Image 1 (cartoon, rainbow, N blue to C red):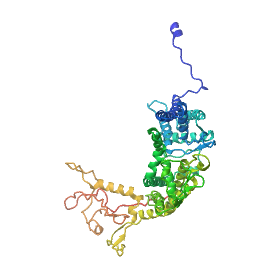
Image 2: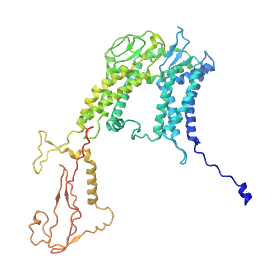
Image 3: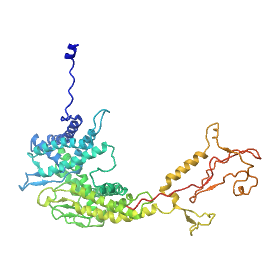
Image 4: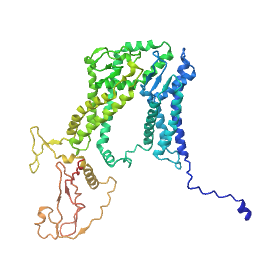
Length: 555
């Protein structure tokens, strides 16, 4: 026994309180963030190396191609690059980000955050949302810092200050979207660290409607911008083709130009929306293209999308027709800003439409800032729409049109219901010249739908017979001994010799055009003469009681 005791397996020591257990889930999230950054960088590296190999005149080795891929990865996050090998000898900044290229890091980072928030097995550890976000960001930003340092030795180095806030901004937004999607996209209460007034205001339905209306207006503007750009490309088809063919004569170079043009299509959509709104977009210092005119820009580089610019000179009715895009956007904001509940006031509807216009203006301002940037120094230092003028124009167009449209739609949806002129018993229905009268609109009010349908279901349960072969036995009902059966109704009180009076029809508050008879009828009465009389299963009801919904207190 002593030997068994001495040679037995020693018991594991209890963990010390000061030692913190390492979480494998947190380490997996860090690795996932680093892998997401590596996948995006690897995709661009493979693409650049393939183009470098297929080029008949490569001007650098594989090291230059890798440095270029690192620069493109940083540019996809909005980081401003600086090109030093220029003809003038002055550093030329390159800050215009192809918006389609931004989708690569955003999708990869969002996927990494979603995988970090999900558990493959039931007993697997699931980290809180904040821990997942922090862990994924640590891995991603570590790779971003290494790429920034590596790109500094290439032909286009990154601005350290620009990279210090652009890469974390894109990573945080993408990871937050992934964590939110993995949690089921909850729309619950805001965090407790926010002020109480902000949390209470955000819970009101007007803000959700305003976000929906503003997003709808921004999408309409982007769609209209795409339509404007497509029409201009078709109108200047010969110039666009000549510009594309004149840039290079080899298929690898043309493929690279085509990829760059496709990556810049979202930028062109934003530029087309800014053009339709009125402020237009800048094509260099002091040169702006608007529907009212285009003075021309002789220093523009040769590129297929730039070949579709409008002709020089004052505007024409064809260019003025672009103003129809913001008109449709304002109508869309007004339509989506209307709630379907009938108890909402006109002021609430107008305020929701105005807030939707604010959201649309902010969205267009942000997109304009992301789609613009310098392409060089001096004349090419300003390229693209000005963010604040585009945002103000989007707000002004949508607010002027959305508010009256929303009020008009609200008035149409809450109009009184009308019906054929039917003479009532009390003569209170008066027909107009067209032979129609107003019906009490409380019956159509959304506030009483639940009560109305509950009454209809209850009535149907008592009136609809069972479809089975044999009828079920009726439920037991109380039987009272009364005298001879007397007339039911007003004559019941005058009947002589009646020992008891059967209750008559019970009148309740009813709504016009509603007559529900819930009386299932009396049971089979006995033979004539004194005897037990069956009481009705339920007292007959003329109509249905409708309770008006209490209006919410004014906000």
